[in-house]
Image (cartoon, rainbow, N blue to C red; front, side, top):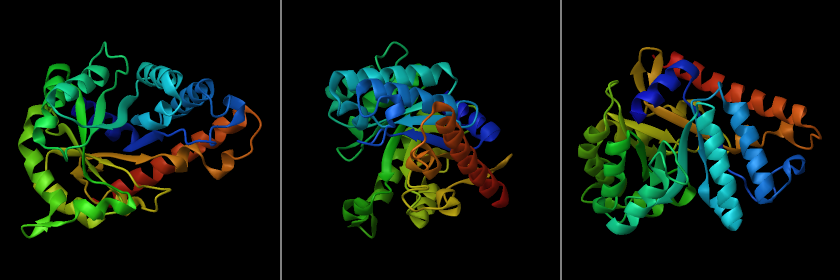
Length: 293
């Protein structure tokens, strides 16, 4: 089950998830720059640096999709490289639509024979619970996971997610409504593969969500470049055998575009900079998890 793989990997390596976000103009020329070939080569190099050092990677589909079919082909080879390296792949595509269309998204991402096969897919629940059902059914059949947006890390998240609805914010209504589905994807560890996306930039909200969803893994964006630190990122985690646990903490720009990698001319120097950034982020999260017991 997806949840068991996440917990096992996080206990062994730490909770870091490496975001693979090829922002325009940021992919180094030594890989081919901002081209489909460059995105593929750079993404696979990030995978190689993350393998054995992080539990998971999270490729951002939209930053590959902007380059058309060739960009999506690059995403495909990056996902394949990551899965072959033993990394958990969370496809950050934020899909969400009515049932028949949602079934198409599930077929594209949540099956072993899918063109963009991943262990989990990010989805948007704000069209209603029925839009999640095809993904949940696919995960039940394949042992995969869904990462559902609840309280995101972007500055505008509060525009709608924090609106008062009957005395509590909308995101808490969403978290409560998702709780019954968590049992459908529960693994042997007791954790559920129904992940809730809870931004590190909103630690109090993460703790409130945890109270409503004690079994759900969290996927925590906002750590590093978006300004949140270790304590904020782990605010929704709970004590476990090796420290606080309960999900994965994503870091993208801080570990894939660190200052030490700027302007390097050779692959070895780039690889050393990325590896150091990943190891530093992971060490900080592990230390924070251990100190929180």
